[in-house]
Image 1: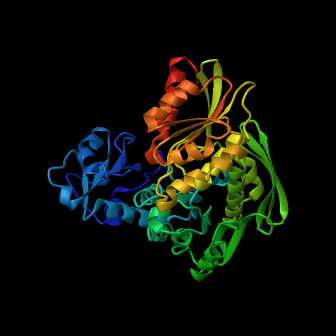
Image 2: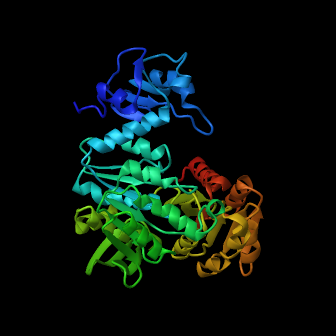
Image 3: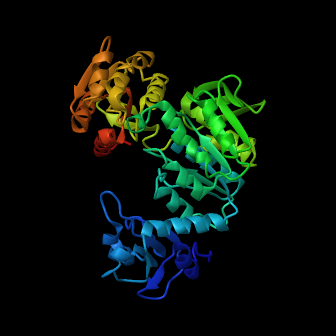
Length: 471
C-alpha cells in the first residue's frame, strides 16, 4: 500500500489549522470539487465567484473525504467528519503548497505566456515522464487557487513538477512563482491578451516577467526570441538572479525550427537545438505547436534531462481538448473534421489556428470553414483587432466564415469578400449556423474566447454526431 500524500499530523501544521469534530486522518489526495473527489481525499472548501465550497462539505464527507479544510468564519454548523479549521481555507491551501514544495526534491519548471502555456505544460508532462515521475497541473489550474492546489498535490517521490501560471492583471504571477520556486521559468509568448486590463504589450511583458521573481537562485529562463520585449524579459531574468537565458525562435535563437511537415494528425519536425540537429515526430499539427516544442526541449535540457528521449516522447503528445484537438464527426453527406480551438482566443492564437486550418486539406468537394466567436478583453481596439484577421482568412483559403458576437461582426464585414460569410448574435445562433452549414468532407476550425461560448458550438456538433452514431 502506497504512503498517503499527507499524514494526519502534517496537515494541520502545514495549513495552520486546528482539528475539530474527530481525530485528523491521513489524506490520499487533495480535492476542491466534490464531483471528482476520491475516497480518502482532503476536501478544501474554497469560496469562488459562483459557489462557496463550504456549502458542499456534507457532500464531501458523503463521498468519502478524510477531512475538510474550512475557514473559521464558516466552520459553525459544519459536520460529518474531521474539520481542519484555518483562519482562511485558501491560505491554508497555500500553506500545504509551501510545505509540499519544501519537502520535495522535484525539479520544478513553471510556464506562463500569452498563448501556448497549457500546450507547453502538457508537452513537458509527456516529454519528462519517461525520465522520472512527473507531476503537472490538471486542466488549466494556473491561478491563485490552481497553483497552490497543484503544489499541495505534489507527490513526495516526484522527480519533476510542471506548473502553469496565468494572470488577468499585474502582480498575480509573482506570488505563484514564490510558491513554486522554479528551477526553470518559461515564457511562451507575449501577445495582446488581457490588454484591456493591462493597457499595453509592454505591461503584459512586465506581468509575465513576474515568473522570474520567485525562481531559485541560478535558475534558467526560456523565452521566445521573437516575442515583443524579448530583451526586456531577458533583462528581468538577470535582475532576478537567473543565471542563464535560453531562447527559441528564428535565426540566432538557441533553438530554431529547420522544417515542419504535416504528417497525419501531427508533424515531422527537424530543429536545431543548442547547435545540433534533432528530428522528431510531434503528435499535434501546426507550426505554432512545433515552436512550442522548442521551448519544451530547452526546458528539458535546463532541468538536466535528456533532450533526445524527450523529443522521442513527443510523438505521444496530443493537443488538449479546446486547444487544437481534432474530431471526426458525422454530418449530412459523411464525416467532417473539426479542429477544436474553442478554449480561448486572442489575435495571436486566432492567427495560429487559422494557419492550422489552412494547412489542413478538406476531402474532395469539401470546404475550409472558420467558426469564430468574439475575442474578449482587448480594450478599445477590439473591433480593429477582429477586422485585421481578414488577411489570415485569405492566407488560410477559408471558403466559409461563420461568426457570432458584436466584435466578430467586424471580422464578418472585413472578411466576407470572396467567400460566403454568415453572422449570428451569439453562441446559440452560431451553433445553428454550423449545424446547418457543415457537411461531409469539410474541415472546420472553431475558436473564440471563453465568454463567447464557442465551446457550445463544439458540443452541439458532437451531440449531433453522437445521435447519428458517429464519433
